[in-house]
Amino acid sequence: MSINMERLTTHNQNTKHNNNNNNKAKYRIAAPSLEMGAEAFPTPTATTLLHHHDHVDAPVVLGLQPSALVDHVARVDSSLLDQISGERGGSIPVAYDELEHILKELKTHNLSSQDESSSVKTLAGGSVANTIRGLSSGFGVSCGILGACGDDQQGQLFVSNMNSRGVNLSRMRMKKGHTAQCVCLVDDSANRTMRPCLSSAVKLQADELTKEDFKGCKWLSLRYSIFNLEVIQAAIRIAKQEGLLVSLDLASFEMVRNFREPLLELLESGNVDLCFANEDEATELIRGKETVSPEVALEFLANHCKWAVVTLAANGCIAKHGKEVVQVPAIGETKAVDATGAGDLFASGFLYGLVKGLTLEECCKVGSCSGGSVIRSLGGEVTPENWHWMCKQMLIKDLPVPSTRI
Image 1 (cartoon, rainbow, N blue to C red):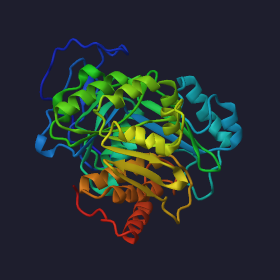
Image 2: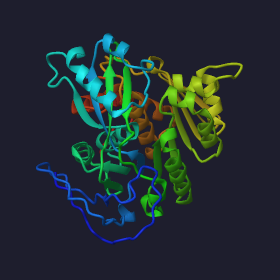
Image 3: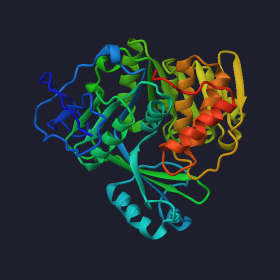
């Protein structure tokens, strides 16, 4: 794949960066070719290169992921999970040396089967990237991603993977520095434990956002994170000014538990139109109330958002829009290999349904199909075989199968 870096304007800006990126080079990646082949990033300079967006071709769904992320996914035995800090099943940031330690330990704790080509699967990751990639490659919805990647090998991998799946990268900045990484440990029950390393990674800052990033888009998809709160708040503010609908994923039960108050402020602002929460996140959100249940959490979310969804793993999901409440069972006939990306791909299917104008129940059913498709293999990306499986399930349920690009 070749990356076309287009120089349009030079700006002298006084930026206020929290992560000492004041003098680092910044790029936007413009209209990359889909050809695969030799790949090289340009040599960084002190010049800021900006690409003006064509509003006619603005993506329908724009995902905000301030730091591009590369996932290292592996099936591991329980002894490795016992060694690392934090609860199983969650996501806790780690320092680079701990990430390196876990990656080294994979050599002796790996459970890969003989039919797997590699013991560790490395691909573009992050909740928003998973959702956007799924919407683009599996559902044919025009999508873009807004964020920053480093000028390193991991950044190159992120760009190559997302670009080859048809994701618009014109709103991505490339900066001198490291790209974020995450190790995803999958146990023998298909549950995943994540340990992201974000501390030294390049990141899109709030004061780098412009109206041009959002103009012409219909939806903004984002994930709650206290570490990105400033850029999330700025993105939502501009998105609403430009008339976008906003979708928010609650990220993890640890994030909700430890940073609940800022999340409540986001929800109570009335600027979040659609909210996704899994059962654990929903429980943490309403912790302290007299009754704690998915139904109570759904009602709480629906009081602040137009659409509210609580996913219930093997029990399907519940959703509410206005006065309508639906409960949809999980899709049958699927064997879970890895739960990584299940919620992200559910969001892909649900958003596809909204873009297509489907009913609330149909949106949930499509989400169930797409969420069920990603857990059939390792990692947060659906394989071609599993996209085919998803379409078959959608036909069985009399749902509109993706055909032409939206």
